[in-house]
Amino acid sequence: MFNKLRYFIRSKLLPDSLFLIDRAKKSNTLYLTFDDGPVKGITTDLLNVLDEFQVKATFFIMGKCAEAHPEIIKDIHHRGHTLANHTYNHPPFHKISLDKKITEIMSTNELLKQLTLQRCTLFRAPQGRWDLKLLGALFRMKMTAVHWSRDSMDFRKESPDIITKRLVDNPLKSGDIVLFHDDDPRCIESLRTLIPHWQSQGFNFKALENKK
Ligand SMILES: [Zn+2]
Image (cartoon, rainbow, N blue to C red; front, top):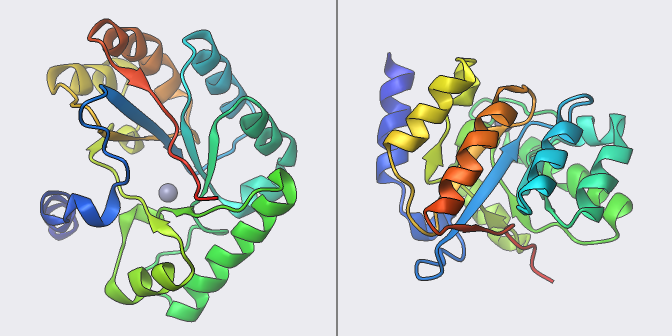
């Protein structure tokens, strides 16, 4: 209960300007983001659905998954999506030291550099657990903290229909950054309905961009 309340307060009170980039309010743009992959047998199916609807997205990957499946990381990159950093091991960030957090971020950045030959500057903390020291460290590393403005709540492992209904009943607005997870196939079925629904409302989809 306490965690739920804290989550709610954080999602309502965090200033967007700190965590969201390029809100693109006028251009009817949505940013789909996928955390916790890549996962064999799921991420590639998701990539095929995104291609089908010509949608570009952002993948906040875990370094250990990238190390296990470098071919999927290269596939994500070659299909024109953005790769972003979601730590190496997904540790509980409220329980580890700043040094350990930085090691998690740097090792994942190094891996992404090896696999894509590009610098990664986008970071999302596990479970969106931010603190001032972490934000300061990211600033010094010239990295951008990316939270989300809408949560599909797909981590609850409910049926795809429920995930779909939640996002249809609460309309998105331009510039929204939407959180999904590609460690479970449920989001794929939801997106088969949601993407054409959002496209019919005039939205287009872009990937967030790593700074050059
Ligand atoms: Zn995560």
